[in-house]
Image (cartoon, rainbow, N blue to C red; front, side, top):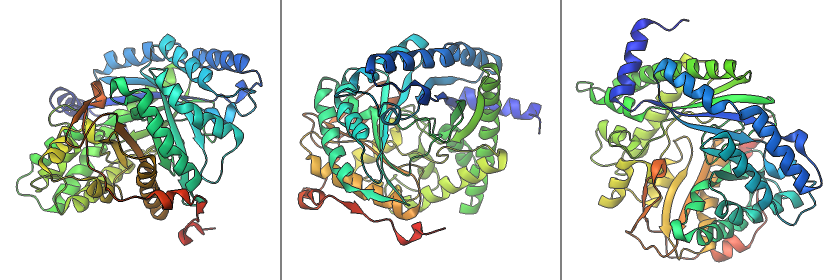
Length: 453
């Protein structure tokens, strides 16, 4: 169905007044043909492959931005999980590969590159272990590289050995980037049920079931949804759901139009349109503000999880009505440091880590951009990860943890990351130990609902 003139006028209003943007155009690149035992040859083949696909990515997206007048905030690349394609490398660690990815990202002019990743939901190969133990140094020595590790799925259960290891990796990453508040951890996410086509960082990687080169687009519009809900006069919750669904429909149409044109000009396949309400630190561009527009005094109070469930469902329904290419995560994100409404809710005491965990049962991802005290133990971080992985595993949904034990910070401090990463209020964790539980290791078996064949 062609785009109508009135839709174009509505889109211009959304861009001008309500912070609508294309949050990211992400090119996914298959690196499986780059494998080589010599890490230097492997790295150069990775660099050449990325540059051959992405050398015009920034120029084309900027041309499209000028053509349609829609801001495209980030240009990104995701690659095949490096642990897979570097399995045969005869090297003690894979930091050199991360540096190659960073070099390619700088040369291509993109903002981030994702895929320094491993999929270890059922066990770890030597290549997986090499990559995971390389993560702290890799993220400390690069600017644009993002890393993800999938430690659980509904089908496989939870790899608790990997969960225990990731608690230590998160802590080490924070320490190696302590001069910038532990910012390395903002580029590291631990997943359950990670999607293969997610265009958003830090979790983007190019899944093994994906095409050779693909364009995935992430659209963000919490400001638009917030404005639409606040314009309603004394609505019922059904009225609010319908309003959000119609707004998501319009946003999705705009995003797919942009994504398909970028893909056509780059001679790549168009993959998915990820309609995720990803907030920014800008006032009003906030998921928390939408929840409060529904009638909550402050995000985090009783009723917040129900309101978020309504929001997430309506966004997905609107997107599915607008396009057959909706994918990735597509729903509502709740990254604390990137949402000015969430920050205020933490500061006024209405939003706690426990409440955020409850909210992740019904949102698109999980505990995102959470700062905790710098002296939080690795076992406690692993236990937080384990809880979130259990939610994803049992509910057959994607969940994730992006947590920052900010070195030297205490509860109530603010940690500044800048840009879209925002400012994180340091939140309290439980003081009781999970050390013995995490040390037991092994695997939490898949739930009975995994038996769907």
